[in-house]
Length: 226
Image (cartoon, rainbow, N blue to C red):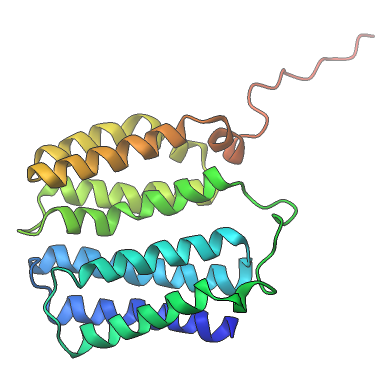
């Protein structure tokens, strides 16, 4: 069952992606493309986490993603792909909420695994890609493209352990978020500001720093006296 549930999660993301590319209403083509790219990538990450990581966070991540996908149905035109995506999302949610994952997911973190803050920061930063599409239904402005590109770059860099990505999240992300919020409608601006504030807050936590720089400021080695 865990393999079936993970496959249903991936299939739901694929179906939503196709629906957004074929019929992006009410979003313009570039906004729908951003949502589709983010949805497909996050679905691949959720399936991989369920099958390989097998941590409890993978379940919460997949559930959050599926619920977010279902919200698309509130404003999207119900085409064949959308109906298929709804069914697959519902099946995947039922599987994740049932007892079938209890013996599969680890009850304790694996040795050497990153904590909850680094995982949330990595996923949340990449989630800026679909978010800029959601908040700008009339089309992406250059500021939205910059924020989405920064989300990809900083998420990848932080996942690779780059200290530069942490400082980018701390100092560059607030500026890019303000620019994108200024180019968005009021509701979209409020959403971007809330998401950006949460990510910057996480980037300034001790756990976020230790994930990429566990021993900062070590003194230089002392020379042995003759």
